[in-house]
Image (cartoon, rainbow, N blue to C red):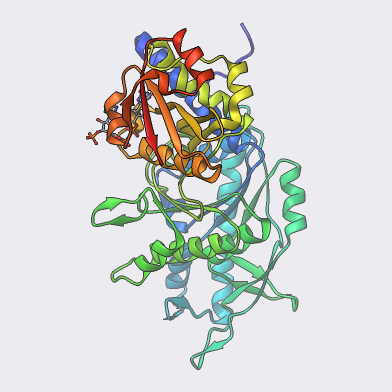
Length: 450
Ligand SMILES: CC(C)(COP(=O)(O)OP(=O)(O)OC[C@H]1O[C@@H](n2cnc3c(N)ncnc32)[C@H](O)[C@@H]1OP(=O)(O)O)[C@@H](O)C(=O)NCCC(=O)NCCS
């Protein structure tokens, strides 16, 4: 036996082989995400409410897990409820104007105390390595420091915000240097000015600026809701224009408002993916990052699903999609080598690194081409993906001056007919293709003029 930790892993002994195979299946399905995320930089922001929540220690374990999978993490924490409590106890009034706290100088010690206490709590929890906890064996060096430079928020609408500040600069080199050395960086809602003063900042503002300055791969907001709901339905993805439209609506809570404003701004400044996820739901962060459909809302510039020409890196994903259909005799078998040779002919639909669908276009002669290997992942059928792939190939064919398409199929005849193909005699195929057809599976031949 190897020297294994005495903790993690689901209980595989009490449950049946089903449970084991479910676990193995899940683990295999996570592998592409593990590879995709390794070495990437994620900025994760959560407020003081998350720190107070009973799920927080689980979240810390999840941060540790991400760290051990090679993800570079910058954690940004707020402290609003803790600051409110300290100020209330000290009988200090810090009014809000336009939802932003006006920070009198005499409030600063109480604010610093609240922010510092949270930082210490996070550091302590990250240091936990008990053999009966999921943190066993994970040595994490968490660092914090004067990475954020601030300037006063100033006087606006005649209101002096005093020690409330805004981010002026992020010390990118210092943060990157720590990330490269495998440290987790913790930023609080505080910034230091060139004059040696400390300013009270919005944690969302710190997170946004850090993500943009670091050119982070993801900005993740952990909030009290699962994500963005419209008409009672959770939106799994939104683009910045949809976000802007949503923000023009009424009754949007403060947290969501800030998250969305930052998400939209992040997208416009080169951070392509912002996620809004619940801190209260056990496992929501991992579900969002390691499953195809996620748990919250992704705000992204890229269309969530992209149709594009395939590259050699897609071969493994293509094999996963095509092999079961080949085994059922629905598609003709193509070896890995053949796929690699033919890869330039394929188009794929990709979602977050997973191949959901594919189709190939093989030139037959100067004027015609053959559509082949049209396949959509069984869980994603009936969503027009097949039709979209076909439209993509038709566009490609036209742009190469090929105005006649052929398709050979044994079981999908009606689908092609519904997409404008008609059955034709096999001898209408260009000569070379007709020769190979005769040795084939007696497929029906369909053609479409573009
Ligand atoms: C054919 C296939 C690519 C369609 O993908 P899709 O994303 O579900 O396609 P769309 O959403 O554009 O079309 C769905 C429609 O096609 C119909 N359809 C799916 N497979 C069909 C088939 N074999 N025969 C006839 N119609 C079919 C569906 O019933 C649905 O019709 P509806 O909207 O009236 O209910 C997909 O079903 C698949 O991968 N099949 C297995 C592989 C295959 O047969 N490939 C074709 C050989 S080249």
